[in-house]
Amino acid sequence: MVRNPVCLLFPFLLSAQLMFWACPSRPATSERASEPSAGAARSEVDTGFDGDRAFAHVSRLVSFGPRPAGSAELAKARDYIIGELRSYGLKVRTDEFTAQTPLGPRRMVNIIAELDGQSRDAIIIASHYDTKYYQKFRFVGANDGGSSTGAVMEIARVMAAKRERPPFSYWFVFFDGEEAFCEGWTDCGTSDDPDNTYGSRHFVAQLIDHGELKRVRALILLDLVGYKNLELARDTLSTKWLVDAIWQTARELGYGAYFVESEEGVGGDDHLPFLRAGIEAVDLIQLNSYPHWHTPEDTLDKISPRSLKIVGDTVLASLPRIEERLRNRRAP
Image (cartoon, rainbow, N blue to C red):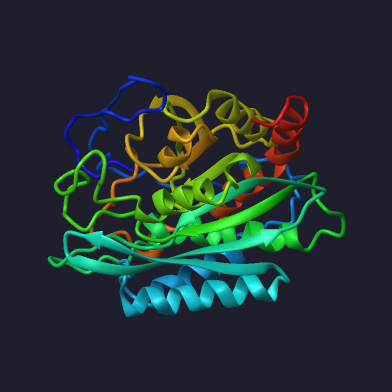
């Protein structure tokens, strides 16, 4: 996502000559008194998603320390993620490449776990698993990089455990190199070759090169989803019907207080390479209202198993609605 608190104009070509303003405000500095409570949602919600399991994944990732792209710590995190995904019975492969960064060449590795469905057409559920590089302080990215990775891992476990094959194939993708190496999102690089979203841009390029892009029907991206004071706003760059489907499901589950009706434009994240390529995508992210974004305080104590469950439940319960919409129209 955009990592600069000032208002910037980004020329993202989501369609010919179309430009978007991305102007995130500074995160709020105060915290609300309590985290999401079980009583706030309907008691019958049972998707199989275990918030404690997801939290344990976040805790393990944070234990490796800062995990910027190309680091030994990220390699440890990668081995852990791959091991867990394989233990669920998923087919796991890696997408390795060398990225040219402001700090020189860096080896990056995307992780892809595949769940075969009744159709070869695929829905992607994704997160970035790297953390931002800082020299000035220790940044472990419990929420930014950790929470979404833990949530997607648990979503993958739940879906892999089901006996019946889903209507669509599912790819659980963990992107490397989402974060910029320079301090600001646009401090380095160019609009054609930015210092960010290395993994997702490479992944989309590979899909195009191998003629596989047409298989991808939608992307559901998670980023910063574990804060104990959870409040997800509608991303204005995301595909509207996907946002609507997820927000409607959240209301039906009794989670409407955490999927709020306010809007914010996330001017840069791993969904944008997909949108530019014509793939419908939604970004679930708490950016403006997360006060510890890109600070040393983005630590494990800010994460709530309950928040992770709220997001995991909502994503899983949204899938039938999303699948039905996709089935009822021709593939792109």
